[in-house]
Length: 336
Image (spheres, helix red, strand yellow):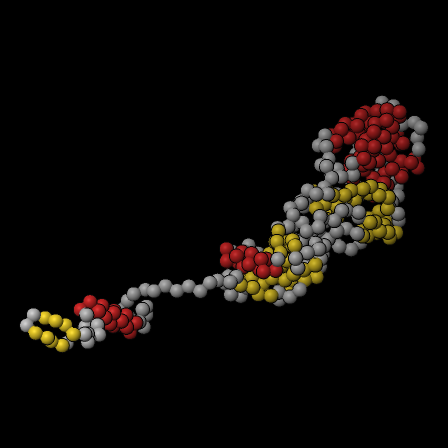
């Protein structure tokens, strides 16, 4: 492995100083530059819904109810059409399903009380409202439908593993969800932020919907979040990062175990220790078993005495060779 690789530490506690040094040593030895996962929590998230949007829809609903009381059918239709358009354009609104159900119930009341009357349209509108929010108690001036929308079962496909799917504002668990035929709003969130939302029309019986939520960015914190230690191996089935390194502390302090990975497949964990140069210190003491040995001290003393004696002999001339020439002195000839 050469170049750059994302480091994933698969342990609850972060690496200590010695383990970090061992990781740096491993990277130098393998020609790899280790980088942290990209923090991309907000990447792919939809803009937050305008906080005033729900209030605006509520005002339109009040306007429609006032128009019903005044028997003004055109005013009712204008207000309800504006409210529905706002909700259709913003399925990411948390209360979109509930507000749309109120739009349909108000429309049902309009068809029963304001000319031209249309009992069948009133029945359909009320049934669609029940499909969205499951039904509620009947209000003053309202008349519920006689029949309910047909039962339906909805399965969700394609949702990334790191997202939560929602149906009509309720979280979806694994498997198919029982609901009713009619309009519904589906959303997907990641780390609390909505990344995809859409209105769908669910038919009676069993059907499925494709959740087209974007996947987390490659090598991001969310992409590698599923990597974990399973015994003596690293599992990362859902990781999509092309080159990453999984590491965990070794059995011996100061060591690490490292595995190289590509997408969802990792090699074995191999132990690594940073190289340390040998070091020793001399501590003088009286214990012959510790520190500088006594024999070495006496050896140095003896060597010093020999050197000193040699210097004295050289200075005194004792080591000079005996002269053989004839010397003339007062009083006669003497040979030395």
